Length: 62
Image (cartoon, rainbow, N blue to C red):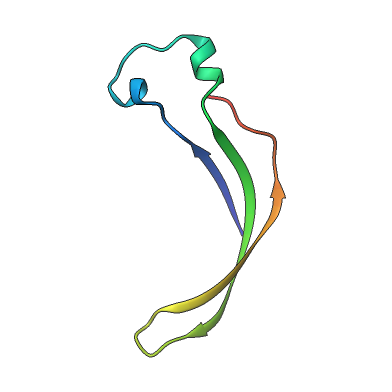
C-alpha cells in the first residue's frame, strides 16, 4: 500500500513569489491510500500491475 499526497504547485510558488494565506489555502491537492499488486513479470523485467484506491482522505492544506 502507498499513501499519496499530491499538491499542484502554482506558478507563483515555482517562481519563489510571495503568496497570501488565502492563495495557499486554494492550492489543488489530494490525499489517498492506494494498493498495488503485481500480476505478471515480463521477460524484459517489466511488470503488469493492478491498482486500486482504497481510501480518499480529506484534502490536505499547505
